[in-house]
Image (cartoon, rainbow, N blue to C red; front, top):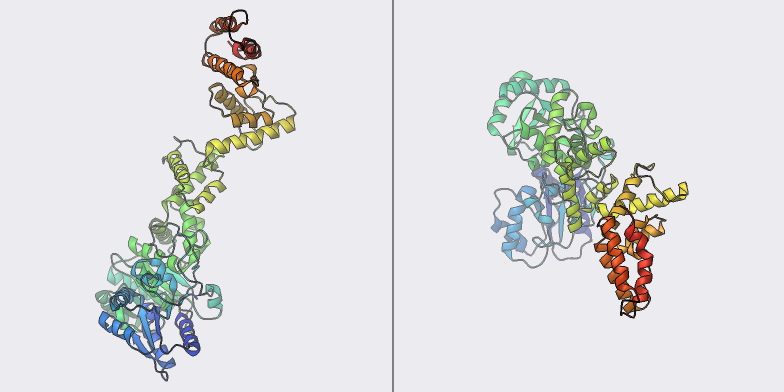
Length: 577
């Protein structure tokens, strides 16, 4: 379920169903909720279970660990409403209570908040907080990673590493954002950029938003009492009390029109926890707005982090933006941005929006995606993604980066998703093996189509493969003794035409007698070691070798085999200049 689309109600129905069907004499249930929904949840649960003999307890900041442990130990059915901000205290209380039996049921409303990691995700860890059953309520993909996602469950944004199979259980309730909006359960959330940071100027801009967008209630997060008091006084005068500003625990309204980002280091988790109220549908409310100052770098970054937790579409669009940023090596213009991001920014202030999105990419983007964009730019220019080691793109050492990816692949540390993306561009992670296979395929195709085995040195195939140069390279490797017997055999099967001076040892015939073969192999090794002498020296060497192994001179019983072998390799040894 998306934020504000009945998260508490769905969790309540799950608890109600459990209570009605369980045969346990007493049970213990924990409902994890955003702090902003604690008051509404308390009222709903109190009304629903008013006639049941169930202890209902909301874990506020004034509740101690001892009180939590006592509630867990009592022999009666207990439902604990635990804000995510209290999850650490609850976990410590459970551990210190030394209770051996697991919780009967744990429910997580707006479960994507757990993706922020840290103490927020403690409830999902069975080694810390064991439970017989867990239910996660979220609009997000909770089974491992969504395609192309930057974040994985339990990881901090800014460190976008893939995760193995998710720790989230099989019971996940989802309703798409679009469906929830059509059912008038939620409204879309938009990012609104303001230019000012001075209180009096901010108040004037908020008045303008009040008039144009119908914003009547603004909540400041993180909590800023002095700022809230100053803005409340100014807006009360400028709007005749129609636009109100609140912060902290003094606002228990189920729905708010706007969320004003404040502070030097705003917490994206605190912003995300306010999304349920921001997205909750109300009559005449068409949007919920996150208001961030364009001049405050951390405000935009925190807003995009909150969006990434809330909406997988925004998260994936930020990833694509990172790739495109690397491809063009500059900040993207408004029309170049993915629609998923542009649709989240309220109309107007496009320049500030471009900057805000760029800051979101800086905060959330994986540097690997930016490098991938540079590789795409290299491919656009050279029609080939296999950059050489010294290759650069926009002044960045692209070849060295690509080599490091190959090394990671060889060690088995390059993630499968990244391997797939690189191979999708045609990158050869094992260039030697993959290039030989490609050349072999092109050679077979050439022989089949051209009906000849001689490949011109400058021949380039229809797929832009330099087959002529590849053939020359194979000849060179063979002459240097660096072409394996397996590859020589594959080349023979592909009708590779060897020149006399290049005939590989696999084409020489040795005697079947093992001892005679030892003699001829020794002759071959000696000839190969002398192959690089001048033609005059080679002629003298060959004459001397013939005399040495001649049956009239040599006492070896394999002299005839040696002479026959020398006759076979004469053209090869004396070929060339």
